[in-house]
Amino acid sequence: MTNRVRHFVLTLLIFVFFSWGFHAHKTINRTAVHLLPAQLSPFFIQHIDEIEDRSVSADKRRYVDSTEAIKHYIDIDLYGENPFDSIPDHWMDAKQKYTQDTLLERGILPWIIFWEYKKLVNAMDSGSQASVIRHASDLGHYVADACVPLHTTSNYNGQFTHQKGIHALWETRIPESFSGDYEYYIGNVVHLANPLKFSWILVKESHALIDSTLSLEKRLSDHYKEDGKYRFKIKNGQIGREYSEEYVNDYNLCLDGMVERRLQRAIRALASFWYSAWVEAGMPDLTKNKVAGREDMSDRPAEITPNRIHE
Ligand SMILES: [Zn+2]
Image 1 (cartoon, rainbow, N blue to C red):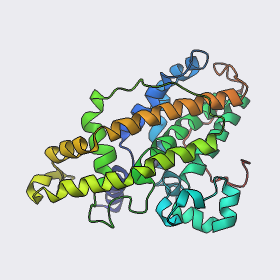
Image 2 (cartoon, rainbow, N blue to C red; image 1 turned 180 degrees about the vertical axis):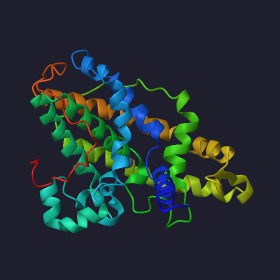
Image 3 (cartoon, helix red, strand yellow; image 1 turned 120 degrees about the vertical axis):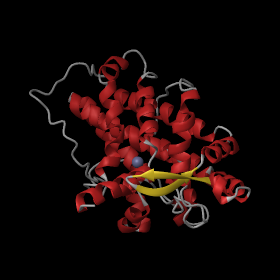
Image 4 (tube, rainbow, N blue to C red; image 1 turned 30 degrees about the vertical axis):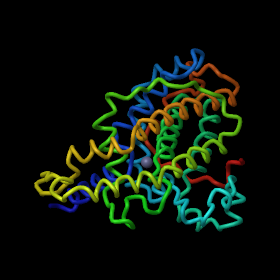
């Protein structure tokens, strides 16, 4: 294997392991468009394919931008017994309490959601359609990640509890297997009075599901023999193993609709963020591009800008 091929395979593996699958991210961004109110939806409908495609750009950036990975999670468990009482919502306060290095080390997902939201407000206000598409899509990615329990713990892949592989099992295998039967158009879009607070609420909800996410799988695993739990798979000329269909099916039954509910939550939350950004921008007509000339639509790494955006 050449170095380049090896790098590609490795990236593919990491990619597959630590993110809602492509399929779920795309579904979330696309479906959220259909929940938007009539005054806002024309622009989003017009660009729905791009907003769907770009739902996974943030994950792809991880391989060209070393600062990207920390934006997709927060290891809440590292903040003590009652973490949500300990961590200040606002970046500046949290930074003062824990230092920036500590915050960066433990992941910055709730703040990134808020900063992306602010960038979207600015983009809508400036009338740059390319920027609106870029930030609306990225916001969709991070909001979706915040709805996954395993994105809120340092034990993100069950590595500390002998449950390695649970990350992809929960957020990739289950949606890929069952999302065809999910009900998506549930609930209303709401105006978010406090978008930062709301991103913390999503993280808090997800974190509350960690115990059942892990313990249900543990209990199920105890009842399975190794050869029933896994099946062999040939990938890139190599033999590997993955969870058997029966196991995916049984874990999904144990979770009793949890994955579907978090997916629904992500979709409604995203539509609410988009709508609130538009209201904050003064409800502009987004179908009119106010930026002259061809805009740069390349997928530049998004910089971390904690000091530039005021909360
Ligand atoms: Zn992600």
